[in-house]
Amino acid sequence: MQFTWSPRSAAGTAGGGLDIRWSVRPPPNRDGRYGRLQAVDLSSGRTLWMQRRRAGEASSLLLTAGGVVFNGSRDRIFRASDARSGKVLWEKRLSGTPSSSPITYSVAGRQYVAVVTGGGGPQDVTFSRLTPEIENPTSAVTLWVFALEQPGQPRGGS
Image (spheres, rainbow, N blue to C red):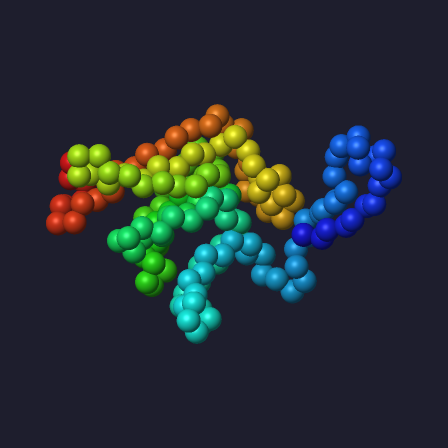
């Protein structure tokens, strides 16, 4: 983004609004991939792995004690990745952009992950200029909840 400060008079400031204007533009010499999920070793600063994609990130990240990272991007994809390798374990295209903080919880010993989609957000407005081919759905706000597989249980088990 390019930020520009536009000083105003005291009366203008009192009238509300912003003194900062911004515009979105691609950085020079970039490959057009705006989304990045990156694992960094904090003791050395070394990058352990990185995922790059065209769609910018839209949700916050959730890292579980079991070593799974959940995140969502503007192309309406919600995914789970292995925290150690970065390998995508699972992904699902949702009805809207996952624009909230995913949560995980347990009920009667079963683990779930939930994320809210839709409703619009700052990423939907700004990134649409950089990735016009990614549709900005106007779907309603939706709560998506997924049951996680339990260790030792076959896929698709209850």
